[in-house]
Image (cartoon, rainbow, N blue to C red; front, side, top):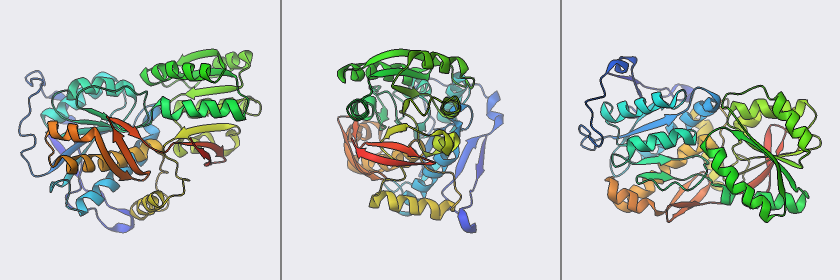
Length: 394
């Protein structure tokens, strides 16, 4: 019922035999899941491998991150398995598409638990998928959620390690207010939970900085005609447009924004933008575009330089560009390794307890998880053609 493929590394060498990319075959679409009771598992934890089910997005607007996210997790697995795995258990990887209808993603998760016997789920996907998947994993297996998100995740068993608005948007808004004299803000985001909740926090931070929100709208995921949105923005005359659009939706919006002449007069600040998205926008469309993140490839640090060197060595000089969202999958497994080592166990109770207060090292350098919240350096950057230039650590 499973398909197994060995992936070649760059340069013709092979990944270790234990490093597998596995996914359920289409034959499982006909399997009856009604007999699987919540909380049940076959032999989970009894096998020698640590089976990680990685839910990545390969379709729809967030699908732009799928290739580099896959590379990031494969790099982490290769490194960890060379060290002997996690607590002596080599990682075996199953990858599932978290794009498309959420009901189908939930079915994939149920199949992963019931028939692939995964020990843990990890994912970088939109928050709407996380909200659905945590109902599947609750009280069954741990779930590591890696990318930027809206904050406030407290579901038992869910460990979120990404940037949140308090640390990402708040200092950036104050900086734009102080140094760019921005006071009028227009908010536009994709129509799902991350923009909804993030905008609630952002409005407080704008008020703190003495600014005002002159418009707000939410756009259906997959929307690529932005003419009406841009007309409303032009009429509102904001100093800054805060963009919470996802993936290719952000690309098409930012292209249209620049092409209609708004980029020269209006600042843009994005919360889920990285080098992959910037490449899609195009160098000619990035004027006055700012972004805040816990990771940029241009950050000059030993940890990041070494990470990028290993990434290029494994996947070649023309590999998909790495960015915050995709790199977070690498950090997810480094976080798991540190938490398991601290707990001395991969059992759910001890692992979750250790994960609430732990320090792990990844491409961003040392990251502290304190009380279940990630503390990391945060950077404000300005787009410079097809790259970012860090303005300051915030």
